[in-house]
Length: 130
Image (tube, rainbow, N blue to C red):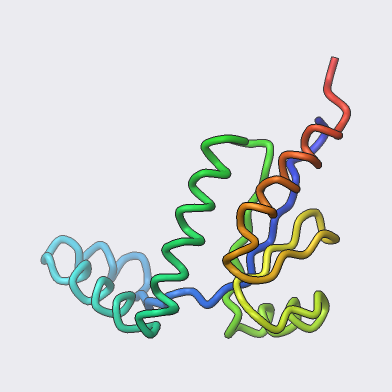
């Protein structure tokens, strides 16, 4: 296998804003930073989207558990400029949208298992190193 398989996931993602690295370290030492960031993440998405993001996160952990470093997973926030562009490019009108190797497209959380099967299929068909 020459390079890992690229899997892009376009989804609504929770957002938290951080200070510069030095300020973050200072805030953490004072015990103030984690509470603020946890609150930002918890309130950044409505409950149903946060729940869906949890399902996608579980799926991602499973993909890494099964395929380790054979895949590169890139999560793209659907509300970002890149997410908007990728949604147009891949005709994704619902989320999450999983794009495997730039070609295979799976839309909706009910397609996560099918996307996992496609990842396994593409990895199995790649030539192995000797």
